[in-house]
Image 1: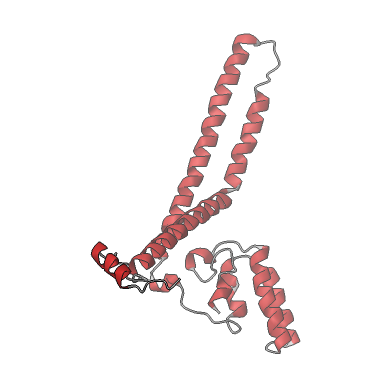
Image 2 (image 1 turned 60 degrees about the vertical axis):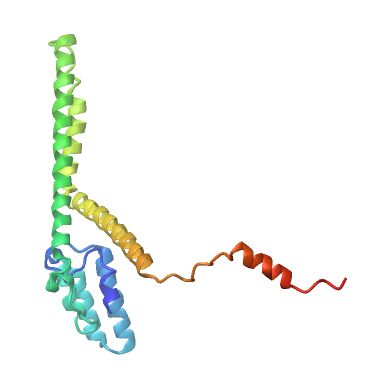
Length: 209
């Protein structure tokens, strides 16, 4: 049941993903399996209620496989073979770099706007004017704090973008390899020499009409 694990936002069997917070959608995937197992008679009512109760208390992805390990096949994952682990870590590192870049841009915007607005205020309204530059500063502070709060969302967004890009690249490479490996569907059609064409015309019987 390998397709079961693809329903999660991140594969909960991977060590790098196990510490991540589980979403309601992730819990719903497990709840569906528990409900189906109860309907099939593989779980008693008490077992079903106990596992659903435990499911509602879960916080991380790593807690989810234990609730269904006797209901679905726990197949080896990429982390155990080491096949895709470097790529996964690389995507996470690039995602973290994208987050740091957004933070740096937010800080730079905050400082630049603050310097410009306060400079304008000093030369035009100070000291009797209302300190209006605090309003754009407050807006930029909220934006900066929001960027910090959305760290995991920004990282995950970049990881998903890189995964889609890698998947498209792999698909194109596979399609190209398939085309190159496929045998020619038909032999090339050879043109008849002109003299043979004329000879066949002479040998053709005349039309009786």
